[in-house]
Image (tube, rainbow, N blue to C red; front, side, top):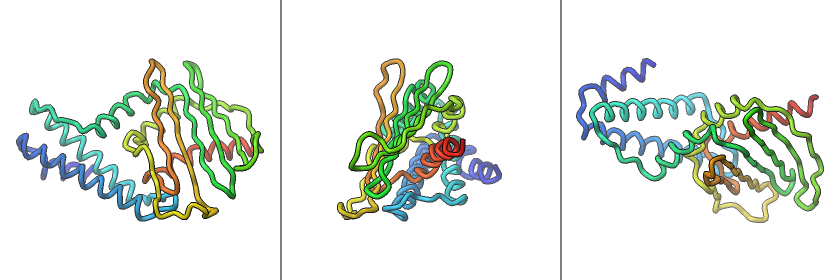
Length: 224
């Protein structure tokens, strides 16, 4: 919070609309560059965020939030980009999610699939593991209860609306056995269009957090 207060005093307090708008653009550019560096630094592997990385990203969120609030207080209508509008809409629609499908795997380890079904009362998560050359799945686990509120809080916390639709590592050898493919489908109530993400040997900067949420469920089921 100390850094947040310092930022307010140095860049926000007493500034006019032009200065604040310029600062918003600067923060967005710096944040995009930082995220891009994180994703490129570990290309071909699932990125591992350090505590310092997470703190840096959180500071950018705080700084942007405070600067946009200052603009709003001046009566300014900041024009959000399409990507910003998409990210904002995703956050707003998290409580309307009804189903999430997630798969990840490759040639050697097979394909793991997770399904979360959400209704008014509860959420159920199921898991299966399939060999890449066989059907039906090798392992199928019965659906288990998942705290709906906890899941919504988690999805909201990782800002998936900021993810790109597709992550592709163009430098990958298509015949390499360690290749990893993954995909996510998110379905909504109220007729909202589904949202999809996917990748081939490339991942969003905070994908490890997303993956670990599902892995915790799998470990829980395996140990019952």
